[in-house]
Amino acid sequence: MSRVFGAVRQNGYVVRDIDAAMKHWIEVMGVGPWYYIDRVQTDWFRHRGADSDVEMSIALANSGDLQIELIQQRNDAPSMYKEFLDAGHEGLQHMSFWSNDYQALYDRALGLGYKVGHEGQIGGPQGRFAYFDTEAHPGTVIEISDISGTKGPFFEHIRKAALDWDGSNPIRPVKR
Image 1 (cartoon, rainbow, N blue to C red):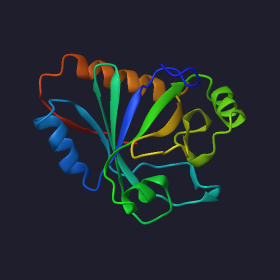
Image 2 (cartoon, rainbow, N blue to C red; image 1 turned 90 degrees about the vertical axis):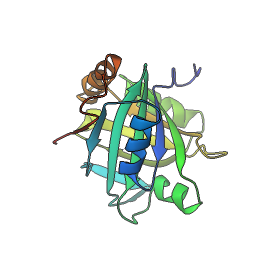
Image 3 (cartoon, rainbow, N blue to C red; image 1 turned 180 degrees about the horizontal axis):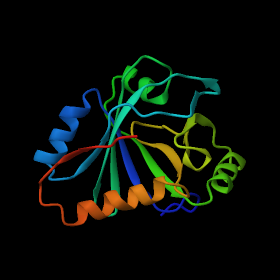
Image 4 (tube, rainbow, N blue to C red; image 1 turned 180 degrees about the vertical axis):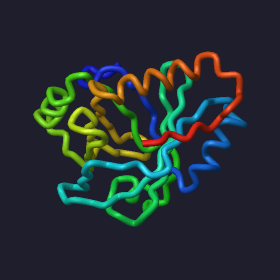
């Protein structure tokens, strides 16, 4: 439990091949089902304060209460995902903390000296997220995510689907 952010709710893995990554998590780790969004539509996205037209695919599944996120960037737009891959890394890139009072947590983090690496919004103002530039070694970026809108119930649906998953229908495309 972080004294600043609360409990880690998600581990985010940046991968070069999301299909191969989902297959690994399903077949080797037994984790699923995966909710797959081929091209995430962001309302806006900024990398280090500048607008960026990042294109990405994501897949989400749970292992117990911990959500696993797989991210494959589909273009060369500036992002912390691209920086991670360009540094020769692949795998765990961030830990995410979720909040129903996103703005207060965001302001608190900035007040403590955290710097935004990239941030954006998906599905309206209650779909904001920010990644703080905290990477001391691979896998230590901190993300905060607003779950006060539709994202919260969607994440809960994913968690519940994993509870008694029998291995059937392992990849479930999400239409947005």
